[in-house]
Length: 436
Image 1 (tube, rainbow, N blue to C red):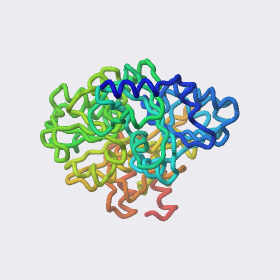
Image 2 (cartoon, rainbow, N blue to C red):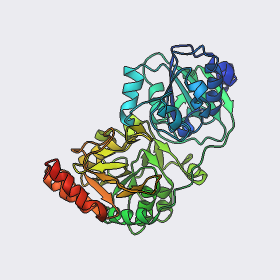
Image 3 (cartoon, one colour):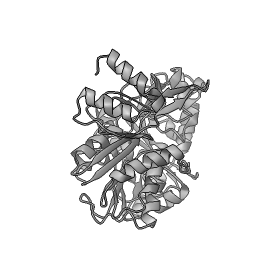
Image 4 (spheres, helix red, strand yellow):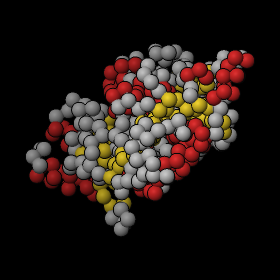
C-alpha cells in the first residue's frame, strides 16, 4: 500500500498542470456523462481559449460535466466532437461550430481508439484502493476501453471522492496513469422522466410481449421507465443493458429482477454506464451483483445475444413505411445520438427468444400548433436503423412486426399503427410511390 501511495503522490497535479501534458494535435477521448472529469474539462476549456490549440480534438458524449467546452468562443478554437447531444452541445453542433460524431457504442474502442488513434484519455475515477487501482465506476464505457489498448496513451484521471467504485472490468492501476487530479463534486443526477398517457399505452403493448425470465435492455427516457412500471407482474427478469436506470432498481426491490434464469453471466447485472438518481448511484456502487464493463463487451451483439430472451427497448424519432428509423436527428439536424440501439437490436435478433422494440408516438405538434405524423412515407433525415434491422415498431395505436415482411406487408403494418387522421394520406403516398 505504501508503495502505491507514494507513486500516487508523485503524480498528483492541479487540473491546470495536468492539461499542460496535452499538446496541440492531440486527440482526447472523454467518457459519457459523469465519467467525464469536471475540473479537467474546465481547465482544458481555459487552455483552449488561448487560441493555441486549433488542431486539438476532444470526443465525448452525453456532455454533463464540461459545458465550458461548448461555449461558442471556445468550441470555435478547436475540434469538439460529440456523439450523443445534451442541451449544452446542441447549439454549437447546429451551427456547426462543433462536430457531430455518428457513433455506435460497441464500435468506439476500435474506430476512435485504434483507427483514429485518439492518444489521450481523461477519466473520472473513484479513490484508489489499497492495491493501487482506480475504478472507473459508473462510466467505463469506451473511455476505459481506449485507455487499456496496447498503444501509446496519455491517461489523466480525476479522483472524485463522491464517485462510487464498481465491480467488473473497469479498473486502472496508478502505475498506468500520467497525472492525477483530485476533486470533490456531486454527480449529475437525473430524476426519472414521468411517463405520460401515451408512454403508458405503448408500455402496455411492449410488456405483453415480454415473458418471464427475460433479460432487459432499456434505453433513455420516459418510455423505457414506463415499460419498467408495467413489468411488475413478471418473474425472474435479468439485466444486460448499456445503461442501468432507476426502473431496473425499482423492479429489483419489488422482487421482479432476480437474474435466476440468466443464461450469460448468471446472477449478474451487466452494463457499461449508469444514469439516473443519486439513489441509483448509491445502489450500484460496490454492489457485487452488478458488473460494469466497457462498450466493446457489453454492447457487442455477439456477446449480448448469449442472453436468452433478450428484450431491447428503445425510442425513435421518426419511422417510414418501410421501417427505416431516425433516432439521432430532427430532419438532418443532430439532436441526440444512436448510442447502442443498433447493437441491441442485432443482439436481440440473435438471442434465443429475443425481441427488439422501437417505440414512438404516432404524432408530434410543431411550434405553430400543427399536428404531424411521425410515421411518414419516407424518412427525412439520416437513417439510424435500416429497414432490414427493424423488428417491432410500437406506437400508442399498436405494434407492427416488420422483420422478413415484403414492402406491401410493411406498409399495411405501419399504417395500422399510425394516427387515424394520417392513415388515408399514408395509403395515398404509398400508392404514389408504388409501394403498394
